[in-house]
Length: 300
Picture 1 (cartoon, helix red, strand yellow):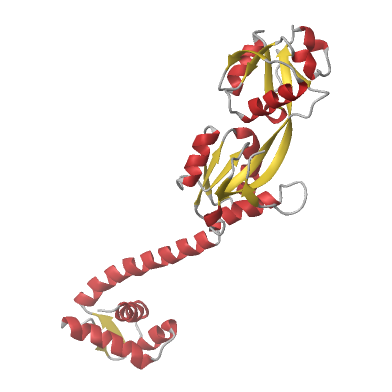
Picture 2: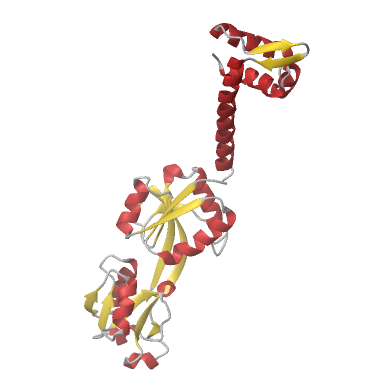
């Protein structure tokens, strides 16, 4: 039994006419008649009987029609699904990120362009986020720091100043900014070693010849904010991640260029994957100047 035989049978049974079935299938009437007769002969069954000018289904034909209705409905659903997926009306984009701050704008723009796609975001540290990308558990990642890896492509997205913040009762709270040498001897609450903000801040302190007095390391931006709000010490955070709070004050560093960067990263071998390309197309409209500039991942 061939698929073409079932299709010819189904078309005749649905239309009640060989002529109409042939027109629907885009073939000649003899082809439809041959397909139906060969199906009947193969199984030794009569599927249609002719009554005058009308063609009627036999009991066996009626039972087969109930099956082919389901069969071709499923086939149509499969075709519709594939077409919708090709046109990005359905699908699942998996995004990895080290935090919600940079990725939120990207996701909003992506959803506006492709509202039918489902998006899931996994938030973790840099090491886990890269591992998920390399293990195909995510399609794209948003990272602050990218180590050299020939398997990865990174697109610079944004740069943000690193700011210091203090409790409103701290002597620095009345300042509009702070100089890096004023940090000498101050009690500092910072992210864990290796975080992008910590790396940028430590480098700036070394270049200025200022010894950092770190009294606490906390692996959560929110927890650092609470510690600073309680007056334990000064905090350091990317300007993009600073959330205004009446208990704290942000202090830009006036005499040092301290920045963090955000990159969109994906596997080089998957650069032509449909969902990855769709995400990059949306990203190109968010970049401050020109199309997305792709390059192999390298640290900053």
